[in-house]
Length: 357
Ligand SMILES: *Cc1c(COP(=O)(O)O)cnc(C)c1O
Image 1: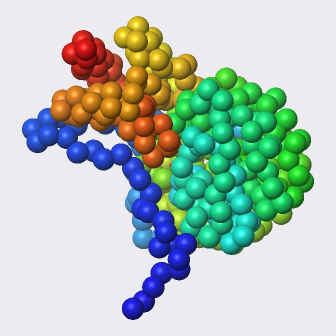
Image 2 (image 1 turned 90 degrees about the vertical axis):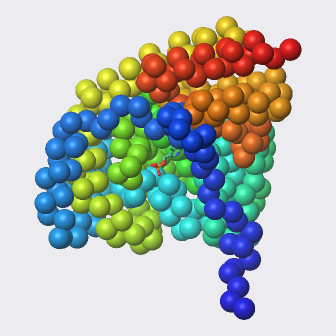
Image 3 (image 1 turned 90 degrees about the horizontal axis):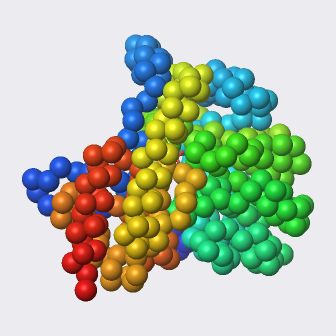
């Protein structure tokens, strides 16, 4: 019989939330950190125009998009890589720099795709403890070994919603050996304070990724980007799929990047949906930490309580993300959704709480 490589056989398909709800209910998905707001009208217009040229292959260098990102973010387009979602860039980075016998280090409740991408190339995934569901620079530094090749952090974190300061990231970088790559995944940076660490790229050992999936409301278009030192850029371009970003997606992302006002409006509206919900959870006695993202992590008194609340929500069509896969089975992660949906989720949890002895 034909056999897969053992490290692939040991993997599971990357887990996303099950959106199963009772028949007849309206699905309210608060499970995938998608924007409840549509993409920028300018992005939609550009996408429509690009679709007319759909007979042609897209620009494999993503040149116009890299120019736009460079201009808006004040970065050198030659150091930027775009791909079909930032997940693809993360996988490419890990594939280029790690393999069997190498360790990829992240923290206990880190974004789980770091582990998937490490395992997919036969590298060993190593996990360091967090403190208060927040990345601990000291714990990461203590977990570095001579086999460590890449340290991955998402900042702000998913599913934690917490962040460490740019100063802490600099301290992490300075504590790491020079031959260890630091990946800072900033998928939610637009929702947090303006505290960029792009300058760390100049060192030659640090890279930063971002995405159009969250604050730009383009998750379905699949576009991510990253800032890499020159030597890393040259290698990673060899393994990202040429033409992986469709012409429609390139056009939408370019227009969205140039429409910063719209993105900032999405962020402000998302925060206005998120923070009152966090306050209501805390008032219900369900501890929910301040978040720097488009979601929040609700802590229940026990694993059973989280499961029972999940079932109560699902019975009404509301899906949050169970966190067992992240080592936080007593938690549910809730994406900021439209006000009526947040109100529905609150009402269900309030009634559920009242029904708990
Ligand atoms: C959503 C998310 C991404 C984005 O992935 P895309 O492939 O760009 O959609 C990356 N990292 C983290 C931590 C995320 O939560």
